Amino acid sequence: MGKFITILFIGTVAVFTFLYQQITATRFSYQVAQLQRRQTVLNNENDLMRFRINSMLALERLDRTAREQGLRRPAETSIVFLD
Image (tube, rainbow, N blue to C red; front, top):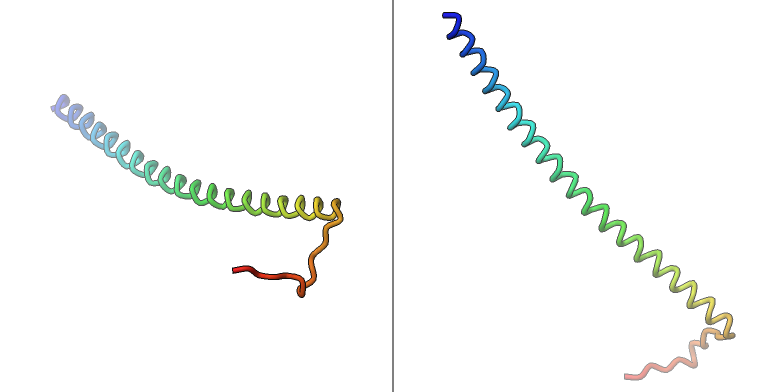
């Protein structure tokens, strides 16, 4: 009788250990997927911010170069659109 209880106890512990590992692995899998989605969103936001910064810097450089060369905006009446 003692061997049976010991084997039953070891079997029960083994089953619970296996189930715990499976549940933990599944939970971690969901967390990794969620973090990957968050990383993708943050990378996209980062790319957009870099684009905006580069656009602003490019406009500032263009404005500075135009001022250094003495260029000015043309008057509205002197602008001609060609089709």
